[in-house]
Amino acid sequence: MAFEAEAPSPLLARAAELNARLRDAHPSEILRAAVAEYRQDGKLALVSSFGAESAVLLHLAAQIDPSIPVLFLDTGQHFGQTLDYRRQLAAKLGLTDVRDLRPHYQDLATADPEAKLWQTDTDACCHVRKVLPLDRALADFDGWITGRKRFHGGSRLALPVVEQADRQVKFNPLANWAREDLDAYAAQYDLPAHPLVAQGFPSIGCWPCTHP
Image (tube, rainbow, N blue to C red):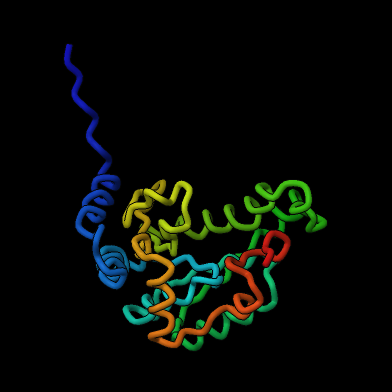
């Protein structure tokens, strides 16, 4: 008895179609496709850490739609320099809808009342301060944009330009770019670096887990 293969979900099929069309496209073209696909209904967001490599994607997006919602996870554990950079960079690029996502008070009261969870369980700390707030925020969107890149290695080596992520379509416009591409773009447009980069921090997250 022959069994028919189950048809892919419409969301997965659409993500695969977009990925096939955009896999070799310039990041600007990928962003324009994302905007065309979801922005007209207000269902597209960009997630940014305002970290060491964030300025390039934010600048690219600002050239296309400076009013796109930018979701920033304000974990309560950031360096002061990151919070300053978030304000200054958003103003410089003309981004008009940067949203600070904070953990719910009740989640912190239950899981991390003394703000010391990072000392014993970093995964649990990330879950309450990043995963839960982001999941809540993304529930309002059908598509979202990340700054992930293949050169970061690990599971990202096979990172597609467009993929399905749960109930949304995720766009990774910088997936194909190397570090040299980012540096060249930042230099071309005179984009300000995160102030901690000059102090030897290759990537910048929460202060307990970030080291030069």
